[in-house]
Image (cartoon, rainbow, N blue to C red; front, side, top):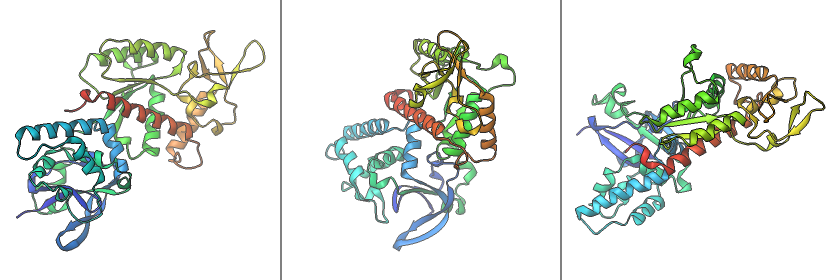
Length: 378
């Protein structure tokens, strides 16, 4: 006999594991995902107990960030199919047909996805596939995106086969390191992720800036050196984020020319339309309006300009167009107050630019992961 742990999409069981042979799927879920969830039993019995729950759309994005992209899922399933066909238990399986079956299967009944596989021998292949890849393929059917992914361990825990302590975290979570030009960039991005992107915030962490400035990344030149160091390591989950100013772009272009640099994503703060016509303080005459994209865009430009009683103005630092935002310390202080008061996700502080920045960063990372699947976990 024994008890089972179930990973489900809606009412449909994706994988069922017995007794002490349960695997860890906690990485699929945000940190706030523990709640009462439905447990499905024979004769359509449903009981609510402790478990994990998140929408498939959320789970799919988390999977992509961790390297389980759509491209990776298709490639892995193709390998499973090829290995299965070599065994020759049944008629050869066509990968595209199997993927189409997964995408098109209607998941609206209390049953198991494996029950929809007509060839019972083929079930063995299905059970050998990491359910993370199955879920990513199922997410390609838009009808599934708003369905709940649930994972229930309570029965096997109550049965004494495992404990939450021994299961949760037993599988390493693929987390992404973000290195920036300084501590302020890190603090702003970290708070933005925590308060505005709670579904994915636990998948990112930041270079740990020390009180000892001699060992910190401090400016674009140090970030370039950091890229050179990372290029020599077996580490594939790193983003180097440069400022979008003159000096930052020089260092970014140098970093992209480092040998063996394809094991990290090198990007800059994005261009924005409103930065194309920005007031510039002119010490020799009237202020002018210029395009500061690529010349004077730092993290402070993504803060709420209405949060202080000053006009947003760039002060040029040299003739090549490198500049910085005047009163940037005041903008930073206003952001810190908003973050401390937990009001970033309210209309009391305008986070549109910060949200756009994080969304762009995540999209760039997922595109990078799709293009470099050989760098991720095998």
